Amino acid sequence: MNNLSLIFNRLNARAVSTIVQDLPITDFQVENEPCLGYMPGSPERKELEAALAKYESQTTDVPIMIGDKEYRTDHVRHQVIPHNHSHKLAQFYYATSELVQKAIDTAVAEREKWERVPLNVKFDMWLKAADLMGTKYRQDLNATTMLGQSKTVIQAEIDSAAELIDFLRFNALYAKEGTKWQPRSPDPKVTVNKLRLRGLEGFVAAVSPFNFTAIGGNLAYTPAMMGNCVLWKPSDTAILSNFTIYKIMREVGVPGGAVSFIPADGPVFGDTITKSPHLGAINFTGSVPTFQRLWTQVGQNLSNYVSFPRLVGECGGKNFHLIHPSADVTSVVNGTIRSAFEYCGQKCSACSRAYVPESLWPQVKQGLVATQKELKVGDVKEYDSFTSAVIDDKAFKRISGYIDHANSSPNLTIIAGGKYDDSVGYFVEPTIVETKDPKDKIMVEEIFGPVLSVYVYPDEKVDEMIQVANTSTPYALTGAIFAQDEAWLAKATDMLKDAAGNFYINDKSTGSVVAQQPFGGSRMSGTNDKAGGLQYALKWTSPQAIKQTMVPLTDVKYPYMG
Ligand SMILES: NC(=O)c1ccc[n+]([C@@H]2O[C@H](COP(=O)([O-])OP(=O)(O)OC[C@H]3O[C@@H](n4cnc5c(N)ncnc54)[C@H](O)[C@@H]3O)[C@@H](O)[C@H]2O)c1
Ligand SMILES: N[C@@H](CCC=O)C(=O)O
Image (tube, rainbow, N blue to C red; front, side):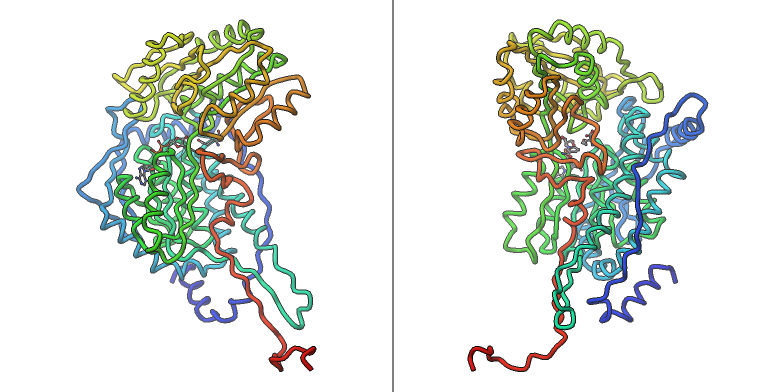
């Protein structure tokens, strides 16, 4: 009998006494996981190289996992290496609608048992997994992310090591803190009041994007930690790194019934889960159209659900850098290059529109163009690569379409980059476009690629630009302002209060860290549930208030009635 079965048996035996008396939560503290340096000759670099060689020498088979069983279907798919797309990194299988339904049935059947595993026990698993991810499996996570999602070493280390580990540790910490708040019991000899955190009834569908391995882990395993049974649908282009997370979580004791791993065609998965009466929640990160479709389907099925499904969606952005004439040019140039072009601009927080005053433009332009020339776009195994390929053929087509638009529009001038080539990998040069029109589609629509557009404004219109930055797009994810003028910083910070869920002053718009800059935006950028923040873990609970009265009720009449 394994540890978990022992716990289940113990719980069944004392089901009644746990109703009001949950196990006390053991205290623990956590810190952010530091990023390693990967200097030549360092142990982490050697381990990474071995892991890269291992995964590159094989096509890893990734099954569908439901409960403890592996499934494979005739819908065979491959995850390719984006910077060398003839190379098949992983083979996987699309789940049919019937298999998605089987996973729903499994989740619904297992939910009661998993929900009753005490939080303490779950926290132990999560902290153990974080430790394994920081040591034994760190380079498996990094190598599968580098090869599968074309991240450079530092971008993988930030994501699939540090951020993923931080999500596991800090969500456990925040959940633990969340259990501390209890309602008032003014006279416990008469009445005891208690709030207990329960998982949601039904199942949670976690639908994750390709661009952050850590986001997949967070979307699936934070609801699971809070007692929910989850169907995790990973992105086709992040299968291998995401399956690595799944395996580590199984190793630390998360049962197969708690999280099913369901690669599937998006609409097949979405249509099946939204039709189920047991849908408890959708935890989505991805594009606006996909989230809108899921929300609409939930609306159409509303009368069929057992509970109102909880909808969490973190979506796209059109993130701005707004530069004041007093700004420090070096910070502006370096911050903008990093934000716009790291990971090929495929961070939802990437800067893709900048507003620069005429007085600074000659220096800023010179800096941007000169720095862009130094950025090597290549294989992720070459340590001097600044970026690599974009994720797939669809992204390549979309991004190159915006470059073609820049080439053909009289309002737009490409001042750096502009070349693209998909013969070996999906390579797009970091591209900088100057626009005469601050409302051109290149300044309004999410591109999700290495294209930065700049509007140069007359200095005296700087306050007008605050409004332009605020109102030009449907998004409100991240934004940054750069200035030395403190009064203007205060004014712009006030005026841009609704323009971004994550707002930066004299810093780039990317690079949020779990527990330091909890992440998410509003307007069409999402429901702003702040991954990496205090509220997030509690979102996945349905608290129950319990009042227990210790004295008998002796009369139906009130004293004044005589
Ligand atoms: N705000 C944030 O925190 C955040 C973080 C990362 C990415 N993003 C956004 O994600 C987008 C890029 O990611 P992507 O290309 O993977 O997004 P996407 O919307 O194409 O896909 C996201 C996930 O949804 C699935 N999917 C597609 N259609 C579906 C359907 N009908 N029903 C159910 N699932 C479906 C996909 O297979 C994938 O797993 C960008 O818009 C980016 O800004 C946002
Ligand atoms: N945490 C990331 C954003 C995640 C979305 O892709 C950042 O701020 O760089």
